[in-house]
Length: 381
Image 1 (cartoon, rainbow, N blue to C red):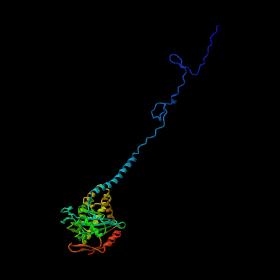
Image 2 (cartoon, rainbow, N blue to C red):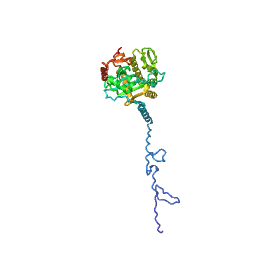
Image 3 (cartoon, rainbow, N blue to C red):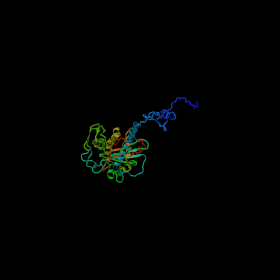
Image 4 (cartoon, rainbow, N blue to C red):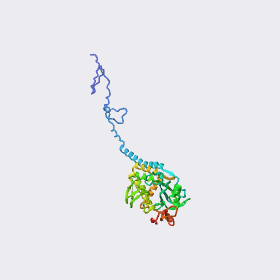
């Protein structure tokens, strides 16, 4: 037998060969990495829900912060209210200050201690029409009300009613009734005459016309006034039953002007004038007025339309004046008249006048300046 070629036995393996189409065998391939272990070229930071199948989920997204709208709104409302509370009085003050009528009034004398205000109630007939309360045929202007308000550096604040018929020295005119100074020389001569009488330098002058009193009381809705006697006075047109009543503007004006039906004459009138101004100040400072912008605007209009002040006085000074007035008429202040000898003094040429006690006046005003005024002295006969 001839030689036969040797056959090599191939042992089967566990992995059967793979066949390509066409029957040709292919070399064995390395097993593919299971899809679940595949690593992407760049892994996302986190996987949003609904990503590709098989992609491992990332960490859950942080909850979105909701804007603190409620807290922000609260601060906005608070800020808005605060701005209104601050801006309204400031704006009102600036507006009111621009409405003030400034006049020449101060003498320019050297300042004295403390702060001194001179308040004058002018009865200029130009402001009244026939038929109005208090109208008469007197020409020109007089001052029915003359009040000296002094705030010392220490001690009691004093409100002094200077009777309009006080017989005093009028610079450049000799002796006459105090209210004649206004008629002859206006506010400047009145200020000079009061300074000559009291020894105080007037720091602020404030003049209110009759129409101003009427309008202010009307804006306040009336004020309560008290008088213990029945009155039927033709000159002032005051009709009054003894007791306390809510007075309208015209009644309040007549209440402040009436003197012929008053047994105390000019002295009684000064008491009622102080009462009226105190009632106006008290009513104007009530919460219902302070928190009512419409009423505040009305009061400013009513007051400034008939209000005149010296060139150095502004609305802030008027605010201080109101506070000082309340203090003077309160339990910690003093109000009254200077020492009087007689309310029916007849020196000749001026009719009946009020005679002040010239010997006691220097000591009286010295006590006022020191903040220790004496008890009110009873008026003479």
